[in-house]
Image (cartoon, rainbow, N blue to C red):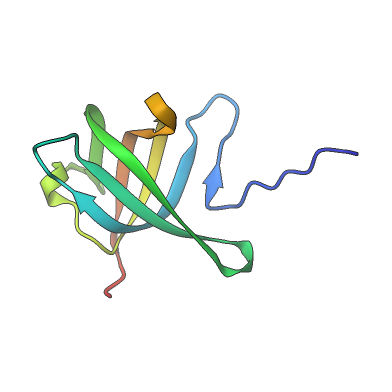
Length: 107
């Protein structure tokens, strides 16, 4: 039986590039007691909703347009593109978080 590519447009990994997920920020945890992380909500074909958490480390590059942004500048509802690496214990470590200016969902 031939392998089927079931990778949705919202989650994609291309050889030679970082895996990336696109979606709206649902939660930004900036708690100083542990590493900050974000939760991104995205839709798969058929209306299936998935939520993905990614840790934000010291190496994570965060930008809105061409401007660098601190984690405290991230707002829930913003549309983001997150490239990531697979971290320890199955968690994702954000490599870059790019916020698309002007694409925010309220609610």
